[in-house]
Length: 265
Ligand code: PEP
Ligand code: MN
Figure (tube, rainbow, N blue to C red):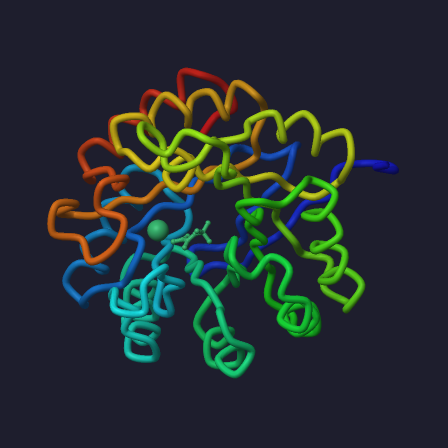
């Protein structure tokens, strides 16, 4: 069980330090599933920044169910993220899938994401734990809270105290109307069990853009410290996760709605 105060994770971004934790304002991370080209990532960065986001998300290396689906543009997408970071002033969060790519990802990313499918990739956890950039650890889609917290312990035990826990939906039995089941009960449970900051990702949690705003608001009501929202300038044309991506206009409106619910954005 948790001992003592909630810890904060401080992330240095071009615009200055951003603080994640119970005692700090809500931090919103937004952006497309995948970095597709320079124009779309720079435009998305500018628009989510104008709406109040503090971080740009976007995958360069994508964990796709099918090997024939778009796998991400890899290294060239990292360059585009660096460009969007510079132009917007936002921090960047992107996923590492393979330890061989960790160094070059850490060069441009302000926070390194370990995705749901790698939550128990223990050798990868040890490696992200042995480098200094903060780590966003997503919950495995079939993982218990205990397994998730133990995965976080691998990072902490390797020497990196800056871990943010991100719930992104778990597998239950309905796949017709929701992609996953967003387990918002983790917010009060994690608050009791751990000092680490909490993030909720309603986009992967529900899988459909029209359901994302309600669950984002619910996550704030439950007490989350941060949110991750997928946003794409043209969701219908997205190379991955278009159906769950908000347009920049809808995201802007959501940010105004969130400010009314609770913790100031
Ligand atoms: C993502 O953030 O785009 C992603 C692939 O997430 P998850 O690992 O939660 O499926
Ligand atoms: Mn995605």
